[in-house]
Length: 116
Ligand code: AMP
Ligand code: ZN
Image (spheres, rainbow, N blue to C red):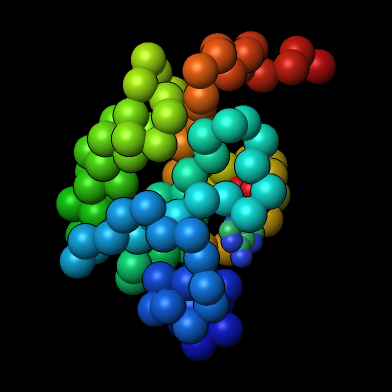
């Protein structure tokens, strides 16, 4: 995807504060952190959202979650963390390249959702 922000970040064409990279996933600090630890983990290959994944995507989805604990611990959230994946309009997804938010820090992140 030529014009996708997170594809460009994964390719190094747009700078980011990288925290991890392997052959399948790339992780970097969120530019506007909501908690002391706020990392985004993305597949290097463009996937728009969980609404567009297929069976072939299962390994990279697993990798995104498998690295979360290590990244959270090493970045200042050793006692737990939260993973958030926003999808589509209802999920409040702003960047149309699948990403898992890993949020945490020394203190609890807080209630899961504000009740409406
Ligand atoms: P979402 O609403 O789930 O699509 O989240 C998009 C996230 O991407 C937000 O938390 C933004 O702060 C973050 N973001 C947008 N642009 C950048 C960027 N260039 N580098 C790092 N994070 C970004
Ligand atoms: Zn992309």
